[in-house]
Image (cartoon, rainbow, N blue to C red; front, side):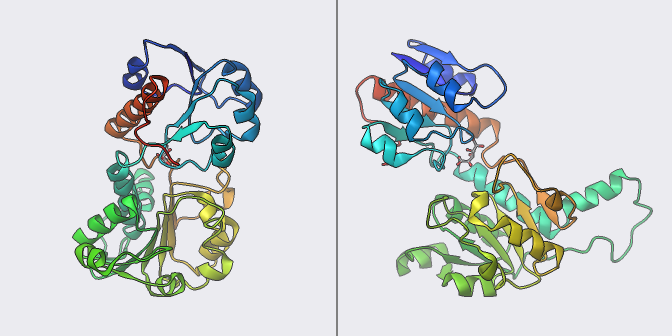
Length: 316
Ligand code: 8YV
């Protein structure tokens, strides 16, 4: 059995696979479709990253493939229908990255609210000439309303953190939680429109699907308060990025904290020019602990399938 790994993942995961023939792309770049098809030609398992677009053409060109193990919780980079049709199992890395991802959403929330990056730049430029009563005034979190769109695993972990900062949490899901669950989590359901109108901070935690593509369209973004802050650590294309940029430029939205972009790794120049935006390079799950755990889970999924057992975390 051959396992092809499109990009070097932490050693701790690769080690678990050492009894198989493992080929790792050691180059520091995303492989093209052609390269993946060539190098994974005889592979029974394929380990992929979000940056690999695993479409029907690739899936259909790999005759021995049994499993695609994605090194991420999101799997919008894989054509699930094509995999299903060929009986190829697809796995992701849920749960283990929840805390790291929720921490990063919180970090962006704090960074935008308290203007951390702007203030850091100010100090580095040598502009700190003395304490002033109104230097870098930010927004207080205590008492503010956080609207969470997508109250799943990560959304719930963000809610818990925000509540510890004294925030009220409202949420929108396709299907509301039971009233028992809402009570336990101390959250209230809102329609998307109402959530957008009411929130001081909005944080996105939905997967990217055909239903969530541009969920925050221009007309939805218009509903936000001009004083509101948008945090996106989910997928860039959930927001109409062009409209978001315009709204940030015109002060129709106060600030944004972004870990994801519509056309990664491209980050629009207009965003980089704005002081009221904090920009990160898609590092939601990037802690040593979590990335190691992700590598182990990926490996365990591959092992299970190659040994004829059920995968631990299949996506369908
Ligand atoms: C990235 C994520 O995948 O898991 C996801 O869906 O967005 C992140 O954890 C991570 O950067 C690895 O590609």
